Amino acid sequence: MLHEVHLQKYFMGRLNHGDDLLGVLTQTCQDLKISLGHIQAIGAVQKAVLGYYHQEQKSYHTIDLDQHLEIVQLTGNISLKDAVPFVHAHLTLSDPSGRTYGGHLFPGTLIFACEVFIHAVQGPTFERTLDATTGLPLWRVP
Ligand code: ZN
Image (cartoon, rainbow, N blue to C red; front, side):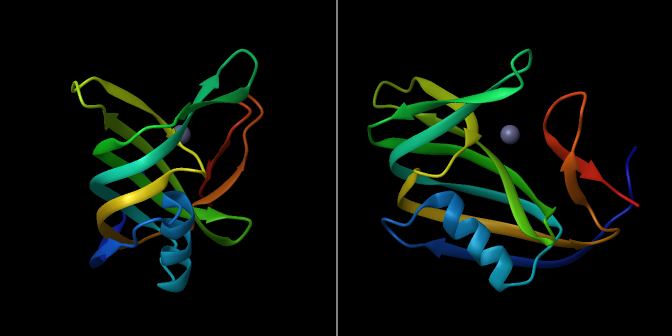
């Protein structure tokens, strides 16, 4: 089921070299009090940790990419989990040969350079709660 939301504000900026990408995105949304929205970014990372969710085991395994990579695309959303802004993001990264890797953004991904665009929207409360079917914290909207 989809819910109507309304564009509230746009934010643009550059993130700092060396910061943890997921950590700083989460902190930024918490500082700006953005509890609902969309994130996109491009740039490069010094190293990355991506996740892949095993649907049968209902658990993530992580993929450590200990190399310099381009952020071809980061796309994600902002909602609430445990009543605080929570970022869920996926990344496509490319290596020197142009080969790409992708997955769920995990902590441990370190920024080389990153330009971010955030759309904050207004709408109903999207709160993540555990979904028994998938084992994932999915949206529940009253
Ligand atoms: Zn994900």
